[in-house]
Image (cartoon, rainbow, N blue to C red; front, side):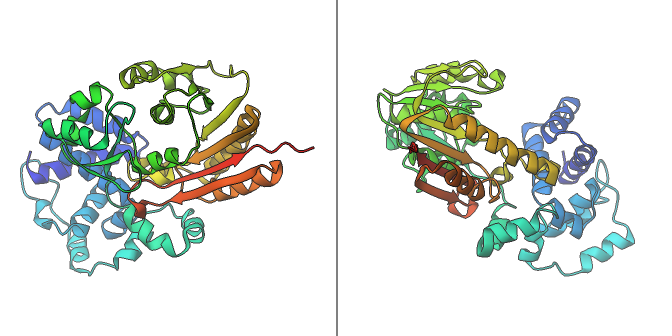
Length: 390
């Protein structure tokens, strides 16, 4: 495919996404229908689509709100040749006089463009919640997210894992956010076929998520409940830190945990699974990685950013309150409760933590907010110790 044909393909895919199709589904359907496209073509088209979704607000301002307009915005923002439009063959149609006039206009300042790449209703919230960090976070969220690996220190050192990966053409460097974190600098597409991955030496996990798990106080022998386990990434990370801990994973949707036995076997971890709603007993540590907006991860799932509504956020905040109350009931006297979200919004993070502490009287052990400026995703963690009132 020519560069112009790749733009045309991205335009068609974006129009389907804007009409309501999930981004991954639209890309998969295009790939299946476009057998002529090689891996390089598929990667380039995917990059165009995800760049446009990350920067949908600013690209629409620069080019227009539909698929063609977003690609016009991308060409302007990235300084590409506008002659790609109308280049013949499978290229998009040539620029209209009005579109040509747009290209003659100077670009607005980068911070002004970056601020447009949040849903309009959300901007005032984020400006308030992030304060002076709002411009830098907005800029960071327009770029592709790094690929991170978590080294399974129960099996290998970080340096040894790097060497094994390098032998398979996967270049990495240690990341300062966590002692287990490696940032992949080359060869990311080889990871899941690598021996290091297949043998459980490394797992894909964001660096901020790893750093949050490192904050959690856990020891061998502890009874641990991962209450909203999902795929089990946090449970696996805890098992690597404390192989003698007795870890139970639970999720209200058992299907989310279907790959956990295989992942645990690969990592050499012992993790029990509770059926949905079937948790019994009390635990020394209860981890709640709560359902949330995912706003801290929107570099990775940018279409989700534009689907969230104020009403949807309000429902999530209410659900988080309910889940915290449920999880607190499983904490043993003197035990710890850890609350996490991959969010940038205070209503899901600090405000939830303040409310819980005020209602329960439990002791705050620690809190931290991670921003994309730190290198990983946006993330929040708060940890309390149960204090029984007389």
